[in-house]
Length: 145
Image (cartoon, rainbow, N blue to C red; front, side, top):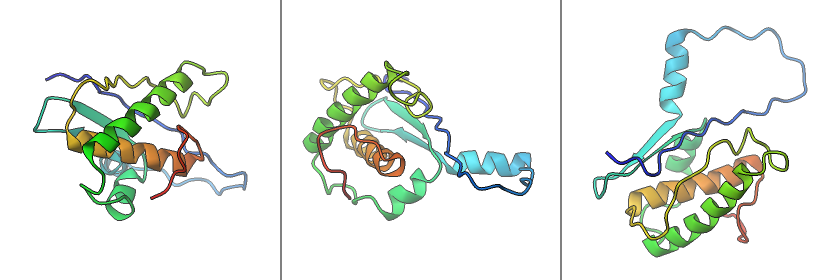
């Protein structure tokens, strides 16, 4: 299976400055459950591409807040994804200017490939979620839902 767009995003969750009591240890079962619930594998029956996103809260946000499937056309999603991926990759290549904990891995996205609706939909929504959560701006557009 081609994994042209395979990438993992491990993002460090910013912690607040207040003091915290000693944290409760996380059991191995609980840790596996957390990772399983925060991992989104985007693959498509239309083609053999796959994206893996590990991001706490993205699954819940996608189900509860994101626009429903087919709200946007595939050409709209492809155009926005091309812009977002280009800006993302520029930031990956500039770790002294942009937080390398946010922009860890390069995304290999070819705008002349047809990745199908599902992959473009979830990738676009991940970029929206990322921008809202981490107060980043990956394009010239106002980020809204």
